[in-house]
Length: 326
Image (cartoon, rainbow, N blue to C red):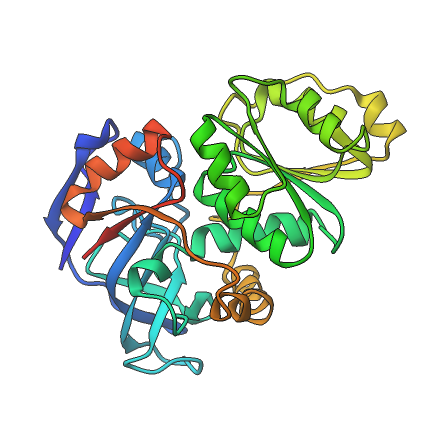
Protein backbone atom coordinates (compact mmCIF):
# COMPACT_ATOMS: atom_id res chain seq x y z
CA UNK A 1 0.00 0.00 0.00
CA UNK A 2 0.98 3.63 -0.30
CA UNK A 3 1.69 5.55 2.91
CA UNK A 4 3.16 8.88 3.95
CA UNK A 5 6.27 8.11 5.98
CA UNK A 6 8.61 10.17 8.12
CA UNK A 7 11.97 9.50 6.44
CA UNK A 8 13.87 11.18 9.28
CA UNK A 9 13.07 13.77 11.98
CA UNK A 10 12.84 17.23 10.50
CA UNK A 11 10.83 19.82 8.62
CA UNK A 12 7.71 19.00 6.57
CA UNK A 13 9.75 17.89 3.56
CA UNK A 14 10.81 14.71 5.39
CA UNK A 15 7.27 13.40 4.74
CA UNK A 16 7.45 11.21 1.64
CA UNK A 17 5.05 8.82 -0.09
CA UNK A 18 6.34 5.23 -0.06
CA UNK A 19 5.19 1.68 -0.68
CA UNK A 20 4.97 -0.23 2.61
CA UNK A 21 3.44 -3.54 3.72
CA UNK A 22 -0.31 -3.49 4.27
CA UNK A 23 -1.11 -4.10 7.96
CA UNK A 24 -3.02 -7.14 9.18
CA UNK A 25 -5.67 -6.82 11.89
CA UNK A 26 -4.86 -8.56 15.16
CA UNK A 27 -7.53 -10.05 17.45
CA UNK A 28 -10.01 -7.31 18.32
CA UNK A 29 -8.87 -5.07 15.46
CA UNK A 30 -10.38 -4.07 12.13
CA UNK A 31 -8.64 -3.20 8.86
CA UNK A 32 -9.90 0.07 7.39
CA UNK A 33 -9.49 1.10 3.75
CA UNK A 34 -8.77 4.75 4.40
CA UNK A 35 -10.61 7.44 2.45
CA UNK A 36 -9.39 10.37 4.55
CA UNK A 37 -7.14 11.07 7.53
CA UNK A 38 -7.09 14.06 9.87
CA UNK A 39 -3.94 16.11 10.49
CA UNK A 40 -3.19 17.04 14.11
CA UNK A 41 -0.45 18.78 16.08
CA UNK A 42 0.84 15.51 17.56
CA UNK A 43 1.60 14.45 13.95
CA UNK A 44 3.84 17.50 13.63
CA UNK A 45 5.56 16.72 16.93
CA UNK A 46 6.12 13.11 15.81
CA UNK A 47 7.57 14.32 12.51
CA UNK A 48 10.02 16.52 14.41
CA UNK A 49 11.11 13.56 16.53
CA UNK A 50 9.82 14.90 19.86
CA UNK A 51 6.65 12.80 20.29
CA UNK A 52 7.39 9.13 19.65
CA UNK A 53 4.48 6.73 19.08
CA UNK A 54 3.57 4.28 21.84
CA UNK A 55 4.88 0.70 21.60
CA UNK A 56 3.05 -1.32 18.95
CA UNK A 57 2.02 1.69 16.85
CA UNK A 58 3.63 2.33 13.44
CA UNK A 59 6.84 4.20 14.16
CA UNK A 60 7.25 6.10 10.89
CA UNK A 61 3.67 6.60 9.64
CA UNK A 62 1.86 9.46 11.42
CA UNK A 63 -1.89 9.91 11.66
CA UNK A 64 -4.21 9.58 14.65
CA UNK A 65 -7.63 9.57 12.99
CA UNK A 66 -9.10 8.07 9.84
CA UNK A 67 -12.40 7.42 8.10
CA UNK A 68 -13.14 4.72 5.57
CA UNK A 69 -14.63 1.29 4.98
CA UNK A 70 -13.86 -1.84 6.98
CA UNK A 71 -12.16 -4.31 4.65
CA UNK A 72 -11.15 -6.99 7.14
CA UNK A 73 -11.74 -8.02 10.74
CA UNK A 74 -9.50 -9.83 13.18
CA UNK A 75 -10.66 -12.66 15.39
CA UNK A 76 -12.88 -11.74 18.37
CA UNK A 77 -14.34 -8.70 16.58
CA UNK A 78 -18.05 -8.43 17.37
CA UNK A 79 -18.97 -4.78 16.81
CA UNK A 80 -18.27 -4.43 13.08
CA UNK A 81 -18.34 -6.33 9.81
CA UNK A 82 -16.73 -5.95 6.40
CA UNK A 83 -18.35 -3.06 4.50
CA UNK A 84 -19.19 -0.93 7.54
CA UNK A 85 -18.33 2.77 7.21
CA UNK A 86 -16.43 4.04 10.23
CA UNK A 87 -14.18 6.73 11.60
CA UNK A 88 -11.57 5.72 14.13
CA UNK A 89 -9.04 6.98 16.64
CA UNK A 90 -5.69 5.22 16.16
CA UNK A 91 -2.28 5.41 17.83
CA UNK A 92 -0.54 6.00 14.49
CA UNK A 93 -0.49 4.83 10.91
CA UNK A 94 -3.38 6.95 9.68
CA UNK A 95 -1.53 8.52 6.75
CA UNK A 96 -1.91 5.38 4.64
CA UNK A 97 -4.27 3.61 2.25
CA UNK A 98 -4.99 1.01 4.95
CA UNK A 99 -4.94 1.30 8.73
CA UNK A 100 -5.79 -1.02 11.60
CA UNK A 101 -7.83 0.14 14.59
CA UNK A 102 -9.15 -1.49 17.76
CA UNK A 103 -12.83 -2.18 17.19
CA UNK A 104 -13.83 -0.21 20.30
CA UNK A 105 -12.15 2.94 18.98
CA UNK A 106 -14.31 3.00 15.85
CA UNK A 107 -17.53 4.97 15.50
CA UNK A 108 -20.08 4.92 12.67
CA UNK A 109 -19.78 7.63 10.04
CA UNK A 110 -22.84 9.83 10.71
CA UNK A 111 -25.39 9.60 7.89
CA UNK A 112 -25.18 13.33 7.17
CA UNK A 113 -21.37 13.45 6.89
CA UNK A 114 -18.87 12.56 4.17
CA UNK A 115 -15.80 10.44 4.86
CA UNK A 116 -13.68 13.59 4.75
CA UNK A 117 -15.86 15.24 7.39
CA UNK A 118 -15.90 12.09 9.52
CA UNK A 119 -12.10 11.85 9.40
CA UNK A 120 -11.90 15.23 11.14
CA UNK A 121 -13.82 14.02 14.21
CA UNK A 122 -12.06 11.37 16.32
CA UNK A 123 -8.89 13.03 17.64
CA UNK A 124 -10.52 16.27 18.76
CA UNK A 125 -13.83 14.76 19.84
CA UNK A 126 -12.17 12.07 21.99
CA UNK A 127 -9.81 14.69 23.44
CA UNK A 128 -12.49 17.24 24.28
CA UNK A 129 -14.88 14.71 25.79
CA UNK A 130 -12.16 13.13 27.92
CA UNK A 131 -10.71 16.41 29.17
CA UNK A 132 -13.63 18.83 29.36
CA UNK A 133 -16.44 16.52 30.43
CA UNK A 134 -14.61 13.67 32.19
CA UNK A 135 -11.54 15.26 33.79
CA UNK A 136 -12.95 18.79 33.88
CA UNK A 137 -16.41 17.57 34.95
CA UNK A 138 -18.12 20.44 33.12
CA UNK A 139 -21.75 20.51 34.20
CA UNK A 140 -24.77 21.99 32.38
CA UNK A 141 -25.00 25.70 33.12
CA UNK A 142 -21.31 26.08 33.91
CA UNK A 143 -18.84 28.16 31.89
CA UNK A 144 -15.85 27.03 29.85
CA UNK A 145 -12.84 28.99 28.58
CA UNK A 146 -10.95 27.45 25.66
CA UNK A 147 -7.56 28.76 24.60
CA UNK A 148 -6.99 28.35 20.87
CA UNK A 149 -10.66 28.66 20.03
CA UNK A 150 -10.18 28.42 16.27
CA UNK A 151 -8.07 25.26 16.39
CA UNK A 152 -9.50 21.81 15.73
CA UNK A 153 -9.80 21.29 19.49
CA UNK A 154 -11.30 24.75 19.91
CA UNK A 155 -14.08 24.51 17.34
CA UNK A 156 -15.00 21.08 18.73
CA UNK A 157 -15.07 22.30 22.34
CA UNK A 158 -17.17 25.36 21.46
CA UNK A 159 -19.83 23.28 19.73
CA UNK A 160 -19.90 20.42 22.23
CA UNK A 161 -20.15 22.65 25.30
CA UNK A 162 -22.69 25.00 23.71
CA UNK A 163 -24.89 22.08 22.61
CA UNK A 164 -24.79 20.61 26.11
CA UNK A 165 -25.90 23.82 27.82
CA UNK A 166 -22.72 25.69 28.70
CA UNK A 167 -21.47 29.24 28.19
CA UNK A 168 -18.22 29.23 26.21
CA UNK A 169 -15.46 31.84 26.06
CA UNK A 170 -12.35 31.53 23.88
CA UNK A 171 -9.09 33.18 22.97
CA UNK A 172 -7.87 33.41 19.37
CA UNK A 173 -5.20 35.28 17.43
CA UNK A 174 -7.10 37.45 14.95
CA UNK A 175 -10.34 39.33 14.54
CA UNK A 176 -11.47 36.92 11.82
CA UNK A 177 -10.85 33.94 14.09
CA UNK A 178 -12.67 35.63 16.96
CA UNK A 179 -15.65 36.43 14.75
CA UNK A 180 -15.79 32.84 13.52
CA UNK A 181 -15.72 31.47 17.07
CA UNK A 182 -18.58 33.74 18.12
CA UNK A 183 -20.62 32.73 15.08
CA UNK A 184 -19.99 29.11 16.07
CA UNK A 185 -21.42 29.66 19.55
CA UNK A 186 -18.83 31.32 21.77
CA UNK A 187 -20.33 34.07 23.92
CA UNK A 188 -17.07 36.03 23.83
CA UNK A 189 -13.87 35.58 21.82
CA UNK A 190 -10.82 37.52 22.98
CA UNK A 191 -8.09 38.47 20.52
CA UNK A 192 -5.09 37.73 22.73
CA UNK A 193 -2.84 39.84 20.48
CA UNK A 194 -4.88 42.95 21.28
CA UNK A 195 -6.41 42.33 24.71
CA UNK A 196 -5.43 40.87 28.07
CA UNK A 197 -7.60 37.75 28.15
CA UNK A 198 -7.80 37.81 31.95
CA UNK A 199 -9.25 41.32 32.09
CA UNK A 200 -11.55 40.71 29.11
CA UNK A 201 -13.06 37.53 30.58
CA UNK A 202 -13.33 39.04 34.06
CA UNK A 203 -15.28 41.92 32.54
CA UNK A 204 -17.71 39.73 30.61
CA UNK A 205 -18.27 37.43 33.62
CA UNK A 206 -18.64 40.39 36.03
CA UNK A 207 -15.58 39.15 37.96
CA UNK A 208 -17.15 35.72 38.57
CA UNK A 209 -14.58 33.94 36.43
CA UNK A 210 -15.13 30.58 34.76
CA UNK A 211 -15.69 27.03 35.98
CA UNK A 212 -13.42 25.11 33.59
CA UNK A 213 -10.45 26.14 31.42
CA UNK A 214 -9.15 23.93 28.62
CA UNK A 215 -5.58 25.03 27.95
CA UNK A 216 -3.15 23.90 25.25
CA UNK A 217 -0.83 26.89 25.74
CA UNK A 218 0.74 26.57 29.20
CA UNK A 219 3.74 28.73 30.07
CA UNK A 220 2.88 32.30 31.02
CA UNK A 221 -0.84 31.72 30.46
CA UNK A 222 -0.98 29.72 33.68
CA UNK A 223 -1.09 32.57 36.25
CA UNK A 224 -3.92 34.17 34.26
CA UNK A 225 -5.79 30.88 34.18
CA UNK A 226 -5.51 30.54 37.98
CA UNK A 227 -6.72 34.11 38.41
CA UNK A 228 -9.73 33.52 36.14
CA UNK A 229 -11.02 30.32 37.70
CA UNK A 230 -14.07 30.61 39.92
CA UNK A 231 -14.28 28.83 43.28
CA UNK A 232 -14.03 25.04 42.75
CA UNK A 233 -12.74 25.73 39.21
CA UNK A 234 -10.83 23.19 37.14
CA UNK A 235 -7.82 23.87 34.89
CA UNK A 236 -7.25 21.08 32.35
CA UNK A 237 -3.94 21.03 30.45
CA UNK A 238 -3.63 19.20 27.12
CA UNK A 239 -0.49 20.82 25.66
CA UNK A 240 2.25 23.30 26.57
CA UNK A 241 2.86 25.26 23.38
CA UNK A 242 4.39 28.17 25.36
CA UNK A 243 6.42 25.96 27.65
CA UNK A 244 6.06 23.47 30.49
CA UNK A 245 7.51 25.71 33.23
CA UNK A 246 5.51 28.38 35.00
CA UNK A 247 4.78 30.04 38.34
CA UNK A 248 1.57 29.18 40.16
CA UNK A 249 0.00 31.10 43.04
CA UNK A 250 -0.62 28.15 45.35
CA UNK A 251 -2.48 30.32 47.84
CA UNK A 252 -5.13 30.99 45.16
CA UNK A 253 -5.35 27.26 44.48
CA UNK A 254 -6.05 26.65 48.17
CA UNK A 255 -8.29 29.67 48.72
CA UNK A 256 -10.51 28.91 45.69
CA UNK A 257 -10.26 25.10 46.09
CA UNK A 258 -9.04 24.69 42.52
CA UNK A 259 -8.17 21.52 40.64
CA UNK A 260 -5.23 21.54 38.21
CA UNK A 261 -5.15 18.47 36.02
CA UNK A 262 -4.32 17.35 32.50
CA UNK A 263 -3.78 14.37 30.29
CA UNK A 264 -2.41 12.97 27.07
CA UNK A 265 -4.60 10.57 25.11
CA UNK A 266 -2.33 8.70 22.73
CA UNK A 267 -0.68 6.45 25.31
CA UNK A 268 -3.91 5.44 27.07
CA UNK A 269 -5.09 1.85 26.67
CA UNK A 270 -7.79 0.54 24.34
CA UNK A 271 -10.33 0.09 27.15
CA UNK A 272 -10.01 3.76 28.14
CA UNK A 273 -10.40 5.03 24.57
CA UNK A 274 -13.25 2.61 23.87
CA UNK A 275 -15.15 3.99 26.87
CA UNK A 276 -14.81 7.50 25.41
CA UNK A 277 -16.11 6.21 22.08
CA UNK A 278 -19.22 4.85 23.80
CA UNK A 279 -19.80 8.16 25.59
CA UNK A 280 -19.50 10.03 22.29
CA UNK A 281 -21.90 7.62 20.61
CA UNK A 282 -24.45 8.19 23.37
CA UNK A 283 -24.12 11.92 24.00
CA UNK A 284 -22.56 13.55 20.91
CA UNK A 285 -23.35 11.47 17.81
CA UNK A 286 -27.12 12.27 18.10
CA UNK A 287 -26.21 15.99 18.11
CA UNK A 288 -24.16 15.49 14.93
CA UNK A 289 -27.05 13.61 13.34
CA UNK A 290 -29.34 16.51 14.28
CA UNK A 291 -26.98 19.07 12.75
CA UNK A 292 -26.31 20.77 16.10
CA UNK A 293 -22.59 19.93 15.90
CA UNK A 294 -20.78 19.99 12.57
CA UNK A 295 -17.24 19.36 11.35
CA UNK A 296 -15.26 22.51 10.62
CA UNK A 297 -12.74 21.78 7.87
CA UNK A 298 -10.30 24.44 6.75
CA UNK A 299 -8.59 22.63 3.87
CA UNK A 300 -8.33 19.22 2.22
CA UNK A 301 -5.02 18.06 0.74
CA UNK A 302 -4.24 15.05 -1.45
CA UNK A 303 -2.31 12.63 0.75
CA UNK A 304 0.87 13.09 -1.27
CA UNK A 305 0.81 16.78 -0.27
CA UNK A 306 1.10 15.97 3.44
CA UNK A 307 4.12 18.25 3.74
CA UNK A 308 1.99 21.22 2.67
CA UNK A 309 -0.68 20.22 5.17
CA UNK A 310 1.94 20.23 7.93
CA UNK A 311 3.19 23.65 6.86
CA UNK A 312 -0.35 24.98 7.17
CA UNK A 313 -0.74 23.35 10.59
CA UNK A 314 2.48 24.95 11.82
CA UNK A 315 1.47 28.37 10.49
CA UNK A 316 -1.60 28.36 12.80
CA UNK A 317 -3.43 30.37 10.14
CA UNK A 318 -6.19 27.78 9.76
CA UNK A 319 -9.62 27.67 11.36
CA UNK A 320 -10.77 24.15 12.20
CA UNK A 321 -9.36 20.91 10.81
CA UNK A 322 -6.92 19.94 8.05
CA UNK A 323 -7.61 16.64 6.27
CA UNK A 324 -5.67 14.39 3.88
CA UNK A 325 -7.62 12.56 1.17
CA UNK A 326 -6.59 9.20 -0.25
